[in-house]
Length: 326
Image (cartoon, rainbow, N blue to C red; front, side, top):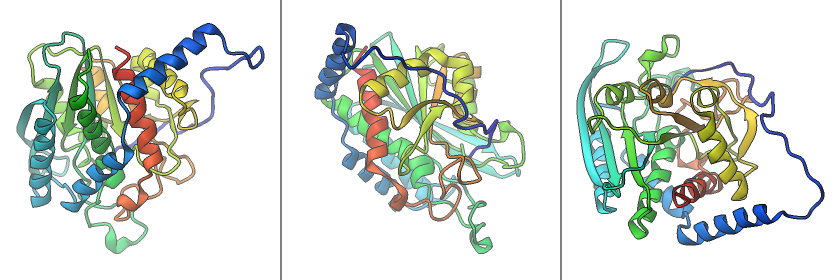
């Protein structure tokens, strides 16, 4: 996928907590009641999100140029249309860092398209062409199945889309499935990654498109996922991080959404921010694996077996609580 540096993960706490006893203030009670009410309106279904993940993986690795990639792209566009989105597909010819020409596709679904206030939600749907982090040398030229690294974020967003088809939010929501994120040079520059997003920032699906902010989901499904505050997210869009993390913690997911610093990850949100749209990255970072990410990252073992429905629920319900708070 991407590179991670400044790996001082979990070394500092950004927000301190104080308490004057166990009594809950009236303002805190109001917030809790509001979150409870929102959750009742839109309850995330982790079983459904998991099914969306396995459906993607059943096509095979979604490497640009592969038949699995074409079929999965058709599936994603069809799902968004089925849930009532206005769908735009960007077809593009890209050249990767190693000189490979690929046909790629970004898929955008607009919900409540007449709303002027909009939120962008995005995830990459492609798979890395080679499992260069696999412990077995003979596997390193095989493509990555991409259950967590790719399909998990997409699966969460498809379930969010399904919920919005049942109850339209007041705010406009744009779901962007970006392609060609993971064909990057692990030893090269950041511009070798996130090719689909780089294309979209130069060629937005609507002229002058400016949502209030964006939220990127990447690798959100591993067991005991821990979403620290990613470095670039804090640099570009600290206020959005604060808002999302506050809602997550008030919704009961404080064990997933940590107030500690994470590393700086070269990911799609970097290029979205550079295009002038504040965007954060909800991404699981793990400093115990040696890579900074989950154990099966960039290996052939990144299958649905690594996915935790509890982690999916923490991210998905947080997003729904955010959406329906506007």
